[in-house]
Length: 478
Image 1 (cartoon, rainbow, N blue to C red):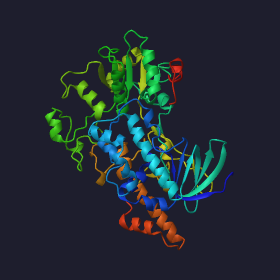
Image 2: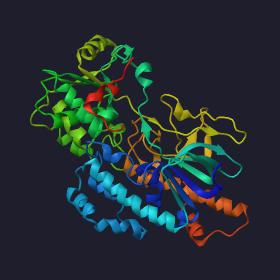
Image 3: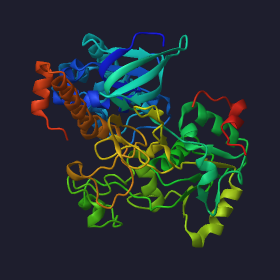
Image 4: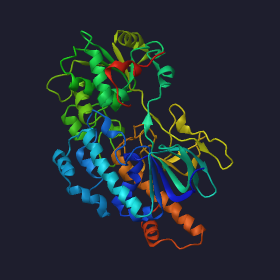
């Protein structure tokens, strides 16, 4: 290996908003110094930490501007709260309960990343920018992670008591050949006209798709999926080229019922929305479909399609429920579509994990439909056993909200959201990292730092650019 092995209390793999969320949550609680005093390092393939890929997308946030501002509001630590008076945050405050572009959301996360970069370095930690993590191996005291420096391919290792995987998620191509839609996988049956929703939602991908569809006299698009991504794609296409679409031109094929978020049952009834019961109301907040419900622009579109609280029904979008009895109709929709956009969900990016004896440890999150983490955000083995000191957070991690965090009892899916990551989920991870650091200090028979002692006593552990001429590279072949 090329460099001397470094040792840290915590190694964060990934530099985007979810990966940094435990640090943001610790800042809100006032325990960021305690966390940084354990020795924090961040591995990021880009030039800086903070935004990740969020600014690449052409859509607006499905979180309110106010909820995004909680990352810098009312902190126990003054460093992030100093951003509150910035011009960007003032614009967010003006928006309030509305949504902001993900480009602006990325700018806020970049500013947060700059503050955290200075704090990490000031506390003696490290930023491994332009580096990739290759694998991590369990040791007697924690984890040994192999890194590659991208500038010269130098490979070296770092030791840490804890590792946080915040590498985001992707849409693997194999789900297009494995998951049946209307009786058959999308590939190879529809080869040449299938594209993943993540590519469409990015600015360059959207431009390429619109360029292709403008060549059709009356283009038809089938969007497969019932998540926020599916409705966000439809909304983006309508907003980007409103005159392109005839009635019924956009078809959304979904298995689960599509739900609408409301701040209360009274608000839902006032809008004449009655498609919910007591099990669909969050007992903590009183929100209707707090987790399952669509929000912001996607919510507005769904309400227009359903004719709920909208003066004019949206006829350019049709909903097709994927049921055995309606399979033939769905097959016709897919066959007649000029483009099929697959919004079949994400799979978490992970690292190869090895045991102390060098044996590969298969992870549950590597399997199709498997969750990466348990209720304490610990990464799970294929057999469902948690790996102590190895945490996961972010898109497709599979965290299930419940208990004090709330959420409607009827919700069966996984919870993704920046507010959750930067608050409850991130704080739980930060507390566990602090507890492990305290245990390590105790094992060494060394006095813990005052910051770590105080924090532990206060808190119980609870795609790339796309050109029109290479659009075929996005459309999934046989």
